[in-house]
Length: 358
Image 1 (spheres, rainbow, N blue to C red):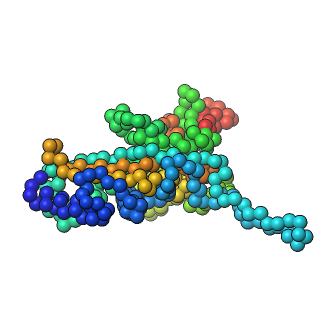
Image 2 (image 1 turned 30 degrees about the vertical axis):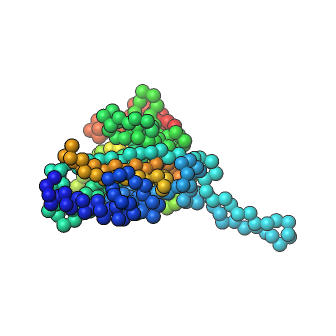
Image 3 (image 1 turned 135 degrees about the horizontal axis):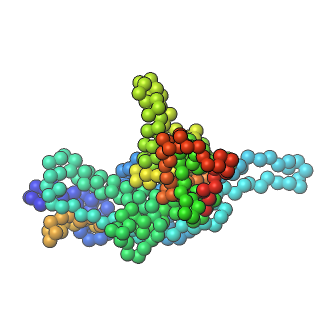
């Protein structure tokens, strides 16, 4: 790291130390709650979809799930004129006694001197470094939310490149605690998408998932989270049939933003063959607000600067009844060229025979 880069880095560390009220960033320090909130927000705003997820700051490492929506009706009427009856308020919130439990996650990274030297030419040098760190943290959090299966004491990124062993995620919460809303294939089979399969198209699949959510648990803000491979497959069929006509192409570019009657989006890091129907605010990220610790220092032995940060966190679905998904690992596409010429062998059979909930 040359003289100018080191000077700017040292000034950046001095400003961070002043912001957090510490003598130096070279020693690990606790991030106090007011600054912790700002740091959590910076990470959350760094990735588009993550800003729609509910961050729940908590004091205790373990406690009851927090319900932000109000499933079930509270509208009622009671005749109190006789004096023998009184109005009884309906309890809003999770009645299942489900709990969260946060565990420490380390977000440690290093930046080589060569990169620091290249960035010193930019006027927003400091913000570029911090934004890159925050965005990587945000992407990791989404990755864990989609793919997390366990919380190992020693994680192994080589064997679990998608963060499967960092923490349990939202898909895991749904299939473990609400299996009837998690559609997976029967043993030895696949969930087939395409003509003659479990669903003829993506619209049917999304509508079935929406139908698993009871009306009283719907918020009106449900969206279909759809993997890129499924979107490409569905769009490819449409454009192959109609996309050569300019007017039709414009129409279908609008239609492919909704499936099953609800808006659709593809979040960052979402499984390519995954589909989930949920109000994004129902996806929760619990963070113990007093657990954030941070350190930033220069390590000339390795020609790099190093940033260490940790926080206690976990991922849960607030209202399990208000979420439904398919097991993305089971999804398989049916070729339209094959299905168009070959009718289903048993058209009278139940089309759902190859799938099961839970």
